[in-house]
Each structure stands twice: as structure tokens, then as C-alpha cells.
Length: 270
Length: 188
Image (cartoon, rainbow over all chains, first blue to last red; front, side, top):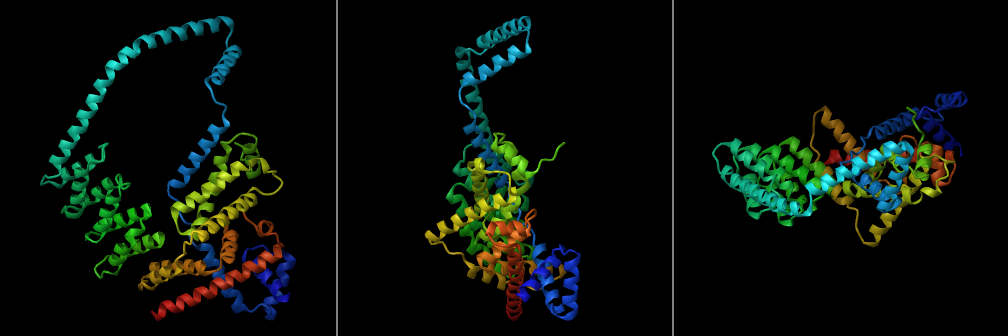
């Protein structure tokens, strides 16, 4: 029981919560050696170290998931149906508008409604849709042509432009993905290779893209690209990448900063 | 602007003002995440577990009376979520690979001062991982902002004195494991 008392006091001392009487009791225990000074020091060091351990930082997923949860719960709680909001509107109109103003508001509202109805009638909307669709298709094709042309250019800035354009493409064309991997693994310019990692992030839902990225880890010399890939694997929680990452870690030539990053990624993935 | 206490906010959530839960999430979401991450080492899983906790906060909001501390109630739910998760993974036969972690430790190279500090912290994290679940949980709870020893005592259904003694012993166990790991590191 005695030792429990001194353990309790030591902890209160460490957390700074000794009152006067306890402080006197504690000090006398230390002076008399009941609480050995060495033990106190060691416990204090461990306590301080433990309390300085950094807090794990969450990614954007944490907030996003909570927001989705809250939105879903609010939808559940809200009564459904347009009748509710119309009734609400009616109540508000009654409260805030005098009969004259109310009649005026109704007139304006319906006039506006009629204008909108004629301007955007179903017949006219149908005419507009195919135009918009055609424009969208043409734009998409243009981007593909631009991509294929620019990716072969001798100037790095053009090839970089190509990779960035690929991010705007809505369909995941396998030829575009192949070209991006070609850039990632073979382009002489490191900025183009980095941009290719970014561009390929969009397609990581596909298993063949993830496999290609993992293979690429062993083919990279540039520390920045190595770090970008390790980061991506960590974010994707891609455990299959661990063997390649370990190999890179063991490689003599690998940069120290990269090794640190890889250690961190492996720790997260395992 | 009035700063509302946790309990006041939760009571408002209980009476239908669901948006107030966002403020409670802002106050406690990150530390809950950190708590789970230290057990799971998995970012996505930790995010999911935090979401599970807040799901339960919403599901059981009608049971919140406001006579105890919100944070105690929250961590009561959090411990249940963690326990349920562990039960589920045990059933599925998923191992927690401490051995592979040891391998990574052996690769630690020698250093400058900043690196030494980083390695020290890494070693401390590894030591924490090697403690029993209960000791680790106790230490992590004691580290939380807003959680006092008497709150932990309430969670564990024991006395405050008992909690303090257990925390003291857990810190010393942590130190012992740390020293063992440090010794191993030098021999490699």
C-alpha cells in the first residue's frame, strides 16, 4: 500500500497537481529516500517523452466522412415532400407581407414563371441539348489530339503541358494511360515525370494502373519522383507496394530523405 | 459570441440542432483519430472508426443526460467501437504484424542531432506498441486533452487513486521496453 501511495504522489507531481499538504508529503518522501531520486528522474523522463510524442495527423478523409455522416442524418431527420416547403413559404408570406404586397408578389412571381416557362420550354431545351453534347465531344477529341501531339515534343514544357491536359480528360483512355506511364518511366525531365504521377493518381481505381505505379518505383532514379510514388502508395494504402519499397530502401544509392519517407510509408502500410 | 460547453452543445444536438455536432467534431475528432491510429496504424481505418463513434453519438443522442462530462461519454462510445473492431478482426483472423515492424526498426541508421531525436521518438512509439492493449489505452487516455484521471476512473469503473497507480506503472513499463529496444538497436 505504501508503494502505491508514493506512486500516486509521483504521478501527481508529474502532472503538477499536488496541493500544499501533498507537496510537503512528497518532498519529505524524496528527502528521506522513500522515493529514490533516480527512480523519480527516470519516470519523469519517460513521462515527458511520452507526452511529447507527436499526434498522428489525419488526412482530408476524416472531415469528409463526418460531413457525409451529418448530411445523411439531417436528411433522415428532415420531413420529406414539397408540400412542407410550400406550406412554410405560405406561412412566411402571410407573416411578412400585407395583402397588397402579397398580391403584387404573386403577380410578379407568376409573370416570371411564365417567362421562364416559354424561354425554357421542353421543345427548345431539346434543341439545345444535342448542340451542347456535340461541342463537348469535339472539345474532348481536341484535347486528345493536343495530348498526342504535345507528348512527343522535344521541349519539356510542351510535354508537361500534355500531361496536364490529360488530367482534364473525362474518359480514361488506355492509350493516354500508356503514354503517361511512358512519360513516368522514360521522360528525361523530372518535372514531366512528377506531373505524370499526379496525372496517374486520377486512374488509381484501375488495378493495372496501381500495378504499373508499383513497378515504376524500382525504375526511378530521381528522389522527388521516388518520394511522390511512396506518398501515393501510402495514401492508397497499397500494401502490394511494400516489397518494391523495401528494395529501394536497401539500395545503397538511395537518398537519405527518400529512405526516411519510405520507412514512414512502410510503417503505415504494414 | 458565446462559447458553448461540450454538454450544452450535445444537449442541443439531442434536441434536434444536428449542426452543433460539427463543433463537437472539431473539438474531439482529431484526438479520436490519433487515439485509433496508435492502435491500428491505418489512416483509412482510423477515419472509419472515428466516423463509427460519431454515428453512435447520433444514434444514442437521446440517452445523453448531460450530468456527466461529454468527453467521458464520447470515449465510452469510442472504447466500445474499438473493442467491437478488435473482436471483428480476431474473428477474421487478421494478425497484427509486430514482427515486420521490428524489421524496419533494425534499418535505423546513425545520425545527426535532429535524426537522433526522430529516432528516439520512433523508438518510443515502438515501445508503446509493445505494451499490452490495456496499458497502451490507459496511457493514451491519460494523454488526451480534457480527460482527467477521475474521468478515466469513471470509464474504467475504479477509483482515481487506482488509475494513477496504473498509469505510473504503465509509464515505467514503457520506459523498460524502450530501454530494451534501445539496447537491441545498438547491438545491431
